Length: 277
Image 1 (tube, helix red, strand yellow):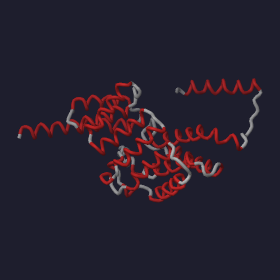
Image 2 (image 1 turned 90 degrees about the horizontal axis):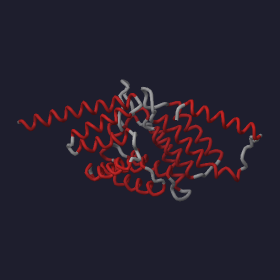
Image 3 (image 1 turned 60 degrees about the vertical axis):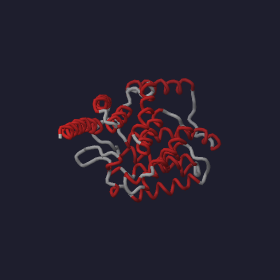
Image 4 (image 1 turned 90 degrees about the vertical axis):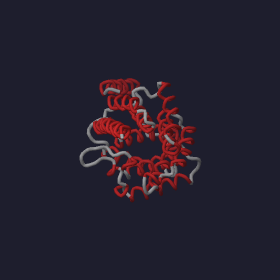
């Protein structure tokens, strides 16, 4: 929401607290678990904004990812053996391990499949795997543990081609059961495209588009564009890339999508030349 709107909400909340004489109290231990989900959600949002910034020229905002990880470690110390707190910490560590490989010195975005995995932080990966193992021994996995498990599959693969995509699809199936959302469904479709091909994934993405649940979400259009490109439907792919670029608010992502448009034109030219010969 706009900063002005949020500022007004904070002012109203402070006024209500002051006028009602609501005292500040640290909740007793028995009330803390009931508040945990909200705290985890906020930490997750902080990390996500740091991991994939919504604006600016940089993809990663290190001050946010670092602070989110620090606070989640503090939470684990204050409330030890909470499986989802551990799951979130593992997720953050495993994703943050890719930080140095996600953007070139030129500012160019580097997608997961094209990243130099030798630049992934092995210490972060080992730490994340250890934390995930702790979480797994505490009970049925929740959404943060499942997302961490997906990140772990990527971390275990020596290259993009060696990634166990069928396993990732199964993890997304489970995640969709415990925490259904259009974004999870879209990510699952990407995994299905890698495991079974673009033709298997496109109907899922089309259904999400038709539902209107991801209206204005640039990654819906960029995902659909990539699937259409793989299927040789270049004109449709171009339209989707254009929509994605128009909706992207991060400069590096927008530049990446525009470059994909150029690549699309190059692919079409090569196809035309092959057809003539």
